Amino acid sequence: MRRSVLLAGLVLVAFLPRLAAQEDLDRAVERAREAFFGHEVGALLATSDTVRLNIPGTAKSASMKPGQAARILEKYLHSAQERDLTLVRLRTLAEDHAYAELDRSYVVRGTSEERRERVMLGFRRVDGTWRLREVRVTQ
Image 1 (cartoon, rainbow, N blue to C red):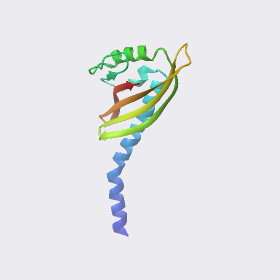
Image 2: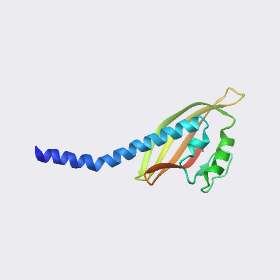
Image 3: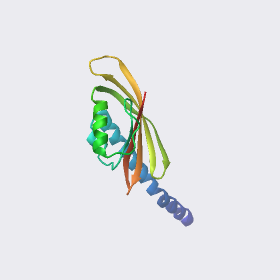
Image 4: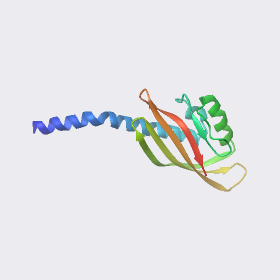
């Protein structure tokens, strides 16, 4: 019995950091999803030190500062009225690297035609914090 309790304690201690990191990632993804949906670009990029963008109408970018990325994203999102932005999949590729795949539906202001896109948000864990590092949108 004592051995079982000790073993259970060791397993718990081994998995607690991983569980906490997953919860932190889940929160970071949800904050990013809400910010993207609300076109709150400042909030979306708040923890980023550099960001890569790959969005329709622009060339795939090298890493850029959040201010520059914000201007490009604001211009891209400006004419859209969001309908839905749903998390489809969250993949952890390494302890410090993850991607969230979202399904986006929106209409261009002044029209009624609904459009759909895939939004990939890339995250890196730096100093214990998940930071948005990439925004990729495909139609």
